[in-house]
Length: 220
Image 1 (cartoon, one colour):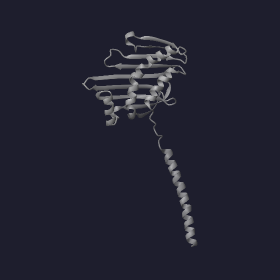
Image 2 (cartoon, rainbow, N blue to C red; image 1 turned 45 degrees about the horizontal axis):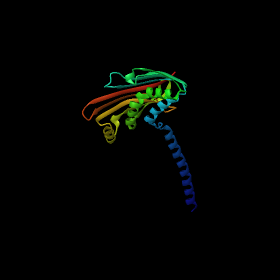
Image 3 (cartoon, rainbow, N blue to C red; image 1 turned 90 degrees about the horizontal axis):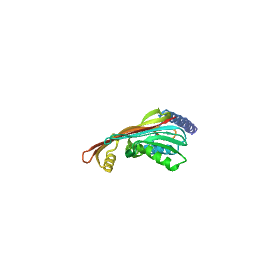
């Protein structure tokens, strides 16, 4: 009887130490695991850019472009922002040619109109691209862009699930389409600091089309 009790006690002690050892091993294994990659919401990151232009807290330069294959010239935005003023150019209103933009943040109407024109290449092309590619985004490592600490991501609709691609094709009335590009997202704010995207499609009638868009922010 005494021997049985001693054996049980020894087994209990060994069990305790065994569990402790297993827990330490599990903790060590967890520490050795690479950090989980969190894929940002690119649509939210793009909206963050517009918000940054709307409410600047530091000096920066914005450059955006949209080139449609059926237009003779690209739509281009260039501007310098400070917390109080912006100075730039935009040819978004093609019939008016390239417009010089100058606005004080205190002038709400002029400021809002200028930001709308400057952000147009992103809001009319880039945002739609980001929405279609979200489920295809993969990490491409850290990078520094325009003085910002960013993480780079790649996207390609070739990675879309067949059902999802069919749904988007129906929405844009296309036989087929592709969107390929890259996005650089700031680690601290989650804003889109740089992007490039190529959107190509084949319409229902066989007509081909394409839009190239790109943009960046740089500290001054």
